[in-house]
Amino acid sequence: MTANSRPLRSLFFGDKGRIEMVYERSRMQELSKISSLYDEVVTRVNFDQHLGALREAEVIFSTWGMPLLTEEQVASLSNLKLLLYAAGSVQSFAAPLINAGVRIVSAWRANAEPVAHFTLGQILLSLKGYYRNVREFDGSIEAFRGAWRGPGVYRQTVGLLGCGAVGRRVIELLRPFDLDVMVYDPFLAENEASRLGVRKVTIAEIFSLSLVVSNHLPDKPETVGTIGSSLLTAMRPGATFINTGRGATVVERELVECLAHRSDLTALLDVTFPEPMGVNSALNSLPNAIVSSHIAGATNTEVYRMADLCLEEFKRFVNGDPLQHEVSAEMLRLLA
Image 1: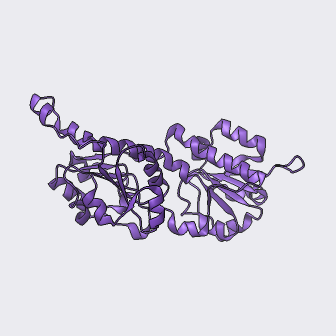
Image 2: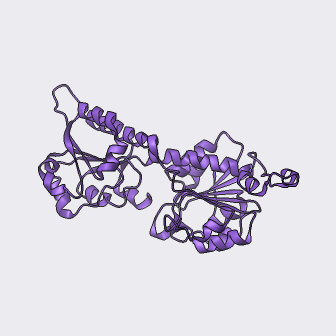
Image 3: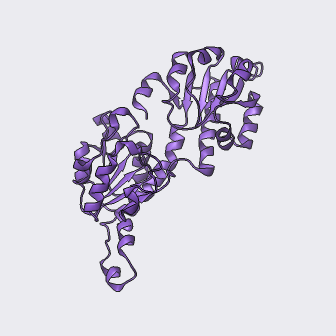
């Protein structure tokens, strides 16, 4: 921003509680110093009460809970140039805004960081055989000697489903380890796979060849039910299936049947469908299914990483610099 230019008019819009959690006090204060910030959070409920501020707003900051706006509501945002979304997928609300000429920034790469960290930890422990080992070890000398030990973190095969923001970050984090990383992603070009140092293969090869399979497929209608018994039953002895992507990509009934018949396999599920899966879910009765409560993504202080990304993008926008995390109409077709 030049010395003679006025601060851009900005406001927070969406779910008030989540906005105050993600853009905590110090970040709100920082924004108020570099923009003309409206003093209230606008929500779906009070939208009409703040029409004046919305018509003047040039930049909107939001996060989880950003609603899909009607055509009339989008039209009322007559001065809006940029929406910064401190969360991941923008599929649920972005199209009408982009069609109206509003630029959208998503913090999906910042949200991908903790998911990739979580996945890396689970992959390394799976290669060591940790999860099967602890369920087989009961403290006895027999179990001490005979409980499963994995091949280890050396020249083993890891398969990734999907090569979006999370998949690519996992590839980067696995690079220091001596592992063969394979990827299934219909949109990944062969030359790009070579640049990333991975092998592009079919989904069947992922499941039959990998000691660990990690799911990062996008949440799209065409991916629902992708992972079923034919793939799961082909997994290697002692293999692990990790799902930090979306529960709907897995046919849960077939996963349950496979795990019940193959005690050597392990499923690490941070997502299910439905979510939560309920106390009567068959997954609860399976010792080789470990289900966490969707904690892989940004939680607690990790959410500030997304707010910081949006603040940095706002500064680039003010200074006329290229945005690094803008979502285009074409990207909506590919992103989760």
